[in-house]
Amino acid sequence: MDFSLSDEQRQIKEMVSDFVDEEVIPRADDIDHDDEFPRDLIDEMSDLGLMGMPFLEEYDGAGLDYHSYAIALEELSRGSGGLGTVVAAHTSLAGNMLYQYGDDDQKSEYLAAMNRGDDIGAFALSEAGAGSDVPSMETTAERASGHAGDEYVIDGEKLWISNGSVADTIVLFAKTDPDAGHRGISSFVVRPDEDDGFHVEGTEDKLGDKGCPTAELRFDDMRIPADRLLGEEGEGFQQALETLNGGRITIAARSIGLARAALDDSLTYAQAREQFDQPISDFQAIQHKLADMDTKIQSAKLLMHRAADKKMRGEDFIKDAAQAKLYASEISREVTNEGIQIHGGYGYTKDFAVERYYRDAKLNEIYEGTSEVLRNTIAQRLLK
Ligand SMILES: Cc1cc2nc3c(=O)[nH]c(=O)nc-3n(C[C@H](O)[C@H](O)[C@H](O)COP(=O)(O)OP(=O)(O)OC[C@H]3O[C@@H](n4cnc5c(N)ncnc54)[C@H](O)[C@@H]3O)c2cc1C
Image 1 (cartoon, rainbow, N blue to C red):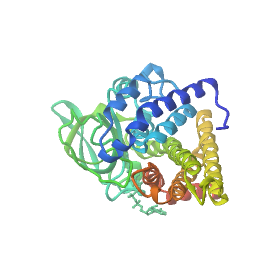
Image 2 (image 1 turned 135 degrees about the horizontal axis):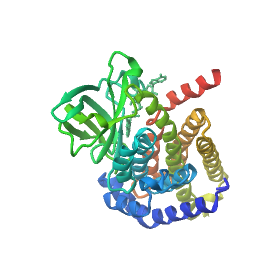
Image 3 (image 1 turned 120 degrees about the horizontal axis):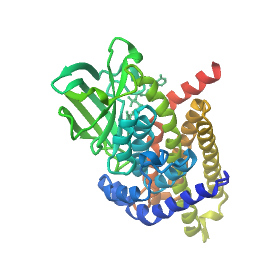
Image 4 (image 1 turned 180 degrees about the vertical axis):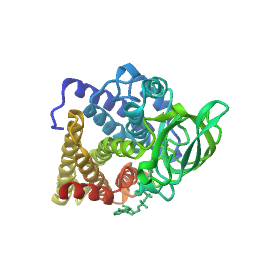
């Protein structure tokens, strides 16, 4: 890379890169094939401080800046796209909700356990009828007085929740005022092991992103203590938007990691594969593909780091994060597609990892804001 990294950022990158080469890449095909949550890798990552990277050491986080976190997420995703989603949903979404909007007790109790890797986090916003259109959600949270004191009674269903079936702490969005549109949404901490009425309905059989369970959740008369509310009632929609903005930087990172994996494998393959008595890398058509792949990756990295930079400076980074995620996700699909093309017929088989990168990359264009919704966001900012 070329974006100048500090010594500390370079050390983080090398440490995570070594971990990925030694521990993740040898396991990645099995994770993809078996679609099992890689608990043992998460334990190793916890020991390395990779489960709470951007949060203060006071809450057992690693205290890294957002560039370092994005670089680490890029490296993890280079090894396994599913692992990239596990960490992004746990950290950028669930972790960040607690970090930004939790009070000190909530952070000490829930965030610290997540940062240590003792607990896994999930972020439950989407519903079957409420994807891009978040305010149309139907899950409700009604304040009541129960035998244990003030509580909320939660009813409804959530769909597409990354880590949802393995999570110990779930940040859940529900309507406390169903007549108030987006102003009636609030966020809560849910603890599946403690909260009666919490059910996992099942997990999706997906194209890619294997190893990260994508769960359907149901809440039946689920009673949680009132002190599990994050911030104030009615603030949930704004909290979700702000959290997703930061999350988009790490989906850009996941995209870049997958694109880099495809380029690395393609460079190796193009120099080894011979046709017409010469390596296919001698053909200008292949060289141009490689050149375009690298140029797109370098451009996406600059957008990602620009967004991270603005976030760290406390500047408005909504458009920057949307552009980084939009561009990186689209080039990750294009670059992994060219990776298959360079591998020819072999690229279309499970004998080479490049078909996995392609399946994993497609998701980047869908979650945390589809490409269409991100273009809306960018255009709204331009026209404002
Ligand atoms: C593997 C996976 C993991 C996920 N993880 C999570 C998670 O952890 N937590 C969570 O809460 N959600 C998660 N999601 C949900 C994800 O964020 C939604 O799928 C996404 O927001 C799109 O919603 P939808 O699927 O309902 O599509 P829809 O909103 O129905 O969109 C369908 C199509 O219509 C387009 N469209 C919709 N509205 C507009 C508009 N205004 N202008 C232009 N085009 C529009 C979309 O771009 C898309 O092309 C995950 C999804 C997947 C697939």
